[in-house]
Amino acid sequence: MQFKTTRGEGQPVSAARAICLGLAGDGGLFVPEQFPSVDLKEALGQPDYPALAAFILEKFLTDYDPAFLRETVRQVYGEAFGEGTAPLRKAGDGMYSLELWHGPTCAFKDFALQLMPRLLVEAKRMLGDTTTTAILVATSGDTGKAALAGYCDVPGVTITVFYPSHGTSEVQRLQMTTQQGENVAVYAVQGNFDDAQTGVKRVFGDADVAKQLAERGVQLSSANSINWGRLVPQIVYYFHAYSQLVRSGALKAGEKADFCVPTGNFGDILAGWYAKQMGLPVGRLICASNKNDVLTEFFATGVYNARRPFYRTTSPSMDILVSSNLERLLYHMAGPEKVKGWMKQLFETGSYEVEPEVMERICADFSAACADDATASAQIRSLFEKEGYLCDPHTAVAFSAAVRNKGEAPMVVLSTASPFKFPKDVLAALGQPLPEDEFEAMAALAQYAGQPAPQALAVLRSLPERFDKTIRPESLRDVVLGE
Ligand SMILES: *Cc1c(COP(=O)(O)O)cnc(C)c1O
Image 1 (cartoon, rainbow, N blue to C red):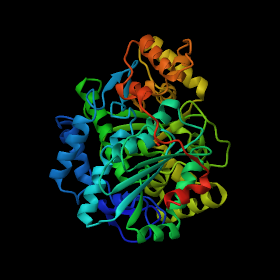
Image 2: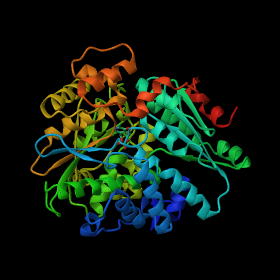
Image 3: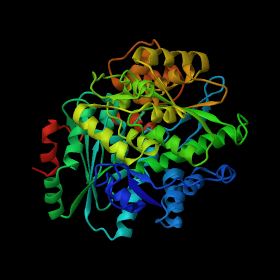
Image 4: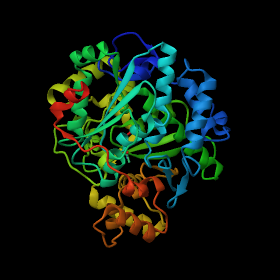
């Protein structure tokens, strides 16, 4: 399997090279040349999550040794994750929650970021690449910690994380600033997530930075979901969810299931569309947004307009105005020439418009809906009171969208973070008194909901903070160059 770029320049590359490079040389994102088709029976027959993961990954990562993939996914998904890796819980009539937060950092991003470092190290070995890989991450909250945990003390790699000084929850911030490891660094960047992401993108595009680093044997790479190595592991849990629906008798093999995904950079939901292209019976994919509803507007009108107010919400990992992975979907729907034009327009004017024929094709698979903080909060409360199911604010945005888009088919909501990452917002939603202290809120939530806070979060209270610097977005370059 070879990978092309969404902007159509250069030759296709192997999976190993796509994973090492992150972003393509023409500024585009790597996409598979074709979609391998999967025999549904064979997929459903896989005995456990690691086996299913190996089965899917082998179809895309054809340059990797299958034995390496099998062994690695067993280490990653067998050991680092608890509670059956990605359990599917019933949360209403025909409604299910796919809990993707039983990994080490309590966010769905662990699925990709526990695996990707190992794929990268193996890719470098295969390519005979002896450079040091300097990973730069812009994070709106969860990616930073999940990437730090994944890359911590990985040989030949350093990782620097930039998070917005305004925009993460206190638990998310502490998860990052208390990170152990010799090869890690963490900075707060003044501003919001887009300021941090734009700063990182600028460094990636700076030829002078690349040259200076190359002289020191260092190559930049990304752990953001623009890297193919982030996307491919996410395809697996769509198959896993479907398989659990079949096993529980909620549907018969071949019948369709709908999926609703709390969306930011469009990586998680795109993986669902990829699963569909591979033959998984996916009905509708519902793209759920918070008050930053740029995608809801796009699906309704065909106009992608990033020039709009930016809102800080209680679902910070979805506070995004430029949804990078949408470029991949547009490529599959309209080809590289169109994509190049739209991305140029986006860069120059902050918006672009996709013609109705293309939108018609997109809307055959996707719906979209948004929910503001008050709606998400009400959703947390009603879900807990009616179904006894506790969810975080991101998942709540998706539940709200799911309820409004529920058809005949079972609806699987992707639950992307542990509610204990956002204890204050969740407690407030439940109408409970709010302790001042974040960790007292965590304990109060545990008591009220009758379930323990994950150990990885509860322990943060007693860990020393190692990183306390705040920088301006313009200084990112100097930080990367060590100046
Ligand atoms: C990253 C994240 C999202 C958004 O996922 P995308 O792949 O960026 O669309 C949603 N919820 C949580 C909790 C996240 O961490």
